[in-house]
Structures are given as structure tokens and as C-alpha cells.
Image 1: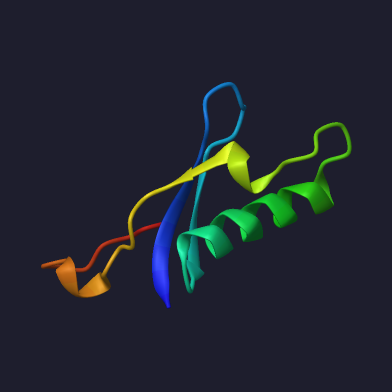
Image 2: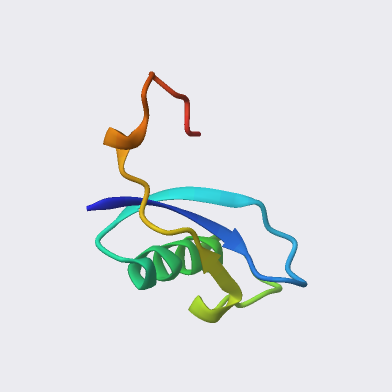
Length: 67
């Protein structure tokens, strides 16, 4: 599992979420599914989001808040 930052694609009003997932596609799908269960006016697709590369926690030299 990896940590991904899932961000909005252009034109959407959406911040970002940190997601633990097996791959980028799963990370985007998880965020879209989560938002679709709480939204009624907008339907999100995986393609509405951009994803950072995997974040390896071992790359941090000190403790960090990532929320």
C-alpha cells in the first residue's frame, strides 16, 4: 500500500485528500466514491482527479503531519 495525495482536476471545487491505496487508480476511485455518497448535485468520475506519485513514508527525515 502507498500514500497518495488526490487533488482536483481543473474546474472542480475540491481540496485534496491523502489516501492509502494499492495504486493511483484505486486512490482516485476511492475519493470519487466517497464524494458521490455525500454529494447530491454533482457526480464525480475517476478522471475528475489528479494523483501525486506514491509517497514513501521512509523518505521523510523527521516526523510530519500529513492530514
